[in-house]
Image (cartoon, rainbow, N blue to C red; front, side, top):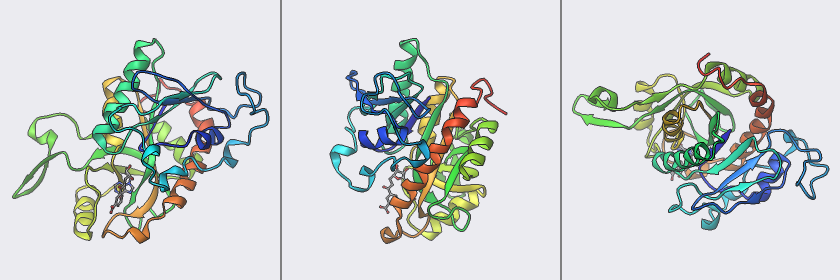
Length: 288
Ligand SMILES: O=C(O)c1cccc(C(=O)CC[C@H]2O[C@@H](n3cnc4c(=O)[nH]cnc43)[C@H](O)[C@@H]2O)c1
């Protein structure tokens, strides 16, 4: 499984979250973390990690998100970010995929291609991160599991309104994660299911929020990467999931209202609950 996040996560925090140490692996222009889904009790090669904490008690996935340290944000010119791996049996790789749909798509496609060429293809891609929540349905600090991943601004602006790219005769504007996986992940994490929009421009006015909601009445959240990750996954025939923790309301710009710490705590807790679901999920069940 490949987990694509927008910005860099501290290796120590990631190791703590998944209860294993990770090692950086030098790959050509790439960065990815390979971690077991299960908390390792005495994993071979997991030196200094004989008694790791349970997943649910793990520290935040990323403290570095809040710091804004450019070195923690990954190198925007290296599409796949940084790659690290645990020496234990690798079942989960963590990819710093970059901010925005294009960067996320490039990073994810690079990682998927590298894995396929190495003869070890992924069977699931998860786009995970923080996002804006449409009020009152997706409260700050809550989790949203996408049952549909929709790009909201890929198309043409016309006097009659927005025309999606599909109506212009091109491409796709939506991807649907496997229904059974969405159901099970939502049940395990307590997340709400609904559409998660992908935008290239963060919504900053009430008018834009209302316009998006009018076009996408089922939208619970917006973020900037899901559709890019989903396009890369679709190109490889791999199912996709998107999990967002709400850090701010969608609407008028108000940086004081951001609750990134709360959202990351919710994401970390939710992620810990994903492990058993993902372990038992049958990757061949791609639609139901
Ligand atoms: O400067 C602003 O007003 C502003 C408001 C919200 C988000 C940003 C970002 O730069 C977000 C980058 C990052 O976080 C995700 N995210 C979080 N909240 C939102 C949102 O309301 N709309 C879209 N994306 C959001 C996003 O996926 C990026 O990874 C700036």
